[in-house]
Image (cartoon, rainbow, N blue to C red):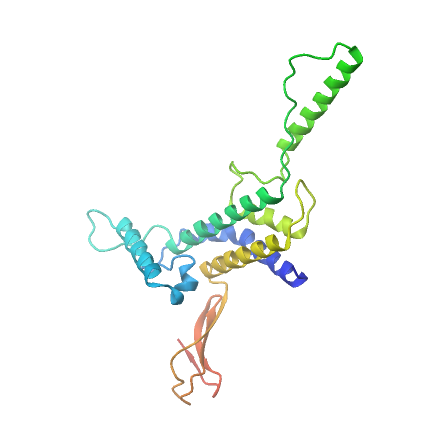
Length: 248
């Protein structure tokens, strides 16, 4: 992987880890639109097949049914931002799966304690050597079991920020109980990190957006009307031919 891609991957992983608390804070923000944009569908809605569109509609209807109160007609705002919640669930599931797969491929198996012996050598010197070997192995196994750098397949440490930081250390080449990443593994981490960071930035309205509109410019009537927005800025349409701009 090139130096540029490695730096970009590190930036994406850091974005997820650094802004996870911001996602948690904004999770309590009530949404004002329905149905919410659901995770990856936010970026791929225009390329959905009929089956994918039907599944997205079914999911939105199911979530809407869940937010309705039995004795309250109509709909009320959900107590949580479903867009942020879906982003957090999607990103965390993707990063945990990626960390599990990466650890299974590169992380060395932990040292196991010495097996219980049914008998010891009769020779005192040989017995002392065997006992010393077992003690040394048990000490190494205990130390390895508490190694904080190892990726865990169970436990409370399995969170999106810690998965992002663990993957970040692998990309940076930090030494530990693992082998270096292959080019294929680097590429996979880069792809997942980029998608995850994009979802986080969109959920927090941090990313700059730019899209070419299908409508013609109302002044010069050319198909060069672009919309810019995001990062907390109101969308603005601009014609790249005549230079006119309109606030949306």
